[in-house]
Length: 71
Image (cartoon, rainbow, N blue to C red):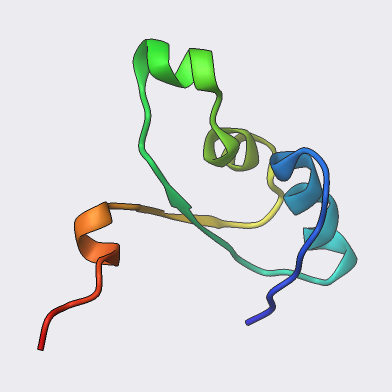
């Protein structure tokens, strides 16, 4: 697992980083936008999936799953 920080267009930076560091899988969370919302707001995940040369694993992000669980 590698974690990195970069500045610029997110999809372009992910796609630039991957081959430079021999990445074999890109894992991303996605909001799962579709239709007009996806066209209006764009989709980093869609752009990465369309242009990546390695497999891309997407997990739909939800606030409920991300919220801390009460003891």
